[in-house]
Amino acid sequence: MIRIFGVLLFLGLFVVPRNAQAESFALEPVADARILSVYPELNWGGDLISVYFDEGNEQRTLMFFDLNGLNIASGDQVVSAVLSLVVSRAYGGSKNLPVEVYRVVSPWAENSVTWTVRLPNQPWSQAGGDYAGRLGNQDANPYATNSDDPPEGGTISWEIASLVQEWLDGASPNNGLLLRAYFGNHLTFPSTESAPGPSTRPKLTITTRQGLPRLSAVFVPPTQIAISWPGENIGSLEENATPTPSGWTQSDGTPTVTLGRTEVRLPISGTAKFFRLKTP
Image: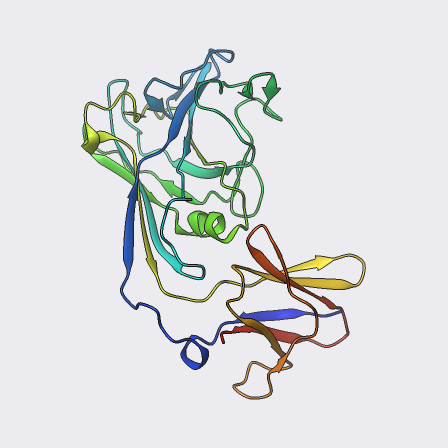
């Protein structure tokens, strides 16, 4: 069975830099809503957002940022993606209890989402939202955690570069993110609708730099491995038995493009191999 020991991108050898300067993008959510266990059938899409959690009343926040309009070249890497919220302590602070960020795995709509449904007549797979951490499990391995307890009007933020990179690469569908906390955390935040001004609205600030697309290796039963990367006509797949500068050969297999990703399927053998993407 083939063992994928590494996915190697030799930027110095094969890439002519397009632009070494970092670029930054500031976004507000196009949709945000809180969902409440105490009012499981009510929609709160136009209200404040919250991670308040007390006896019988757990609140979570859903947010969606539209990345489609960003001028990010295929292969550019996300070096930072900071989600920032302005804190309201009207109902109390965080008590230094964590607030965690997860990715939402099912589509939802701001004006219809509740604790029990994500779209009209379409329930979540379990009440409280369908969400996952970095390893694909719910309530485990969040993409980011923050236990700060800022003063009224202060800012709390999370670094979610890995999640934004997943969305841009197409490794995970962009259904937005979910914020949840632990019992005793009483933080709330202005939403895009309830904020008194632009400076208090939720923000996602993304910083990118020039790079090559990341390769993904997936086993395709029963006898193939699929190597894929975002974009089209931006490189050719090469392989080698060792991660050395010499000995690379072009991989067999015909590239196909589906939903903006290029894929090459290769037969599994008993030899360990390294793969890299070589630009023209």
